[in-house]
Image (cartoon, rainbow, N blue to C red; front, side, top):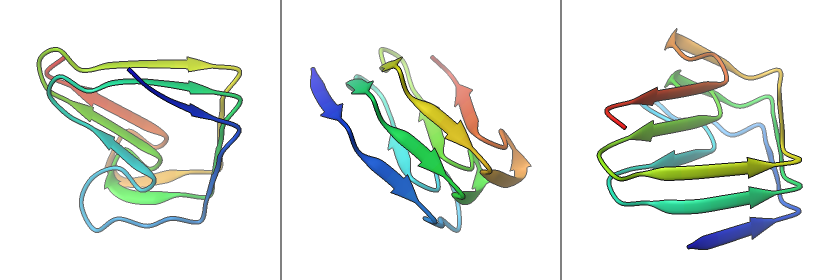
Length: 80
């Protein structure tokens, strides 16, 4: 498992998926005390998850003021 602690993801942009982070098949990620603010993407303004076996754990983590042009203003999850 990959653990990310105390990180701020601010004003990131992606043309496709996950303005700040993308989690795909078999990803195993924990986010503790992180913040996502003002991120933008086509799907999943801040976070995008796709694939069998992917796992995301968010503890004391906030997502605010993020947007998507299509689906999942803050978070988009499919195929999990």
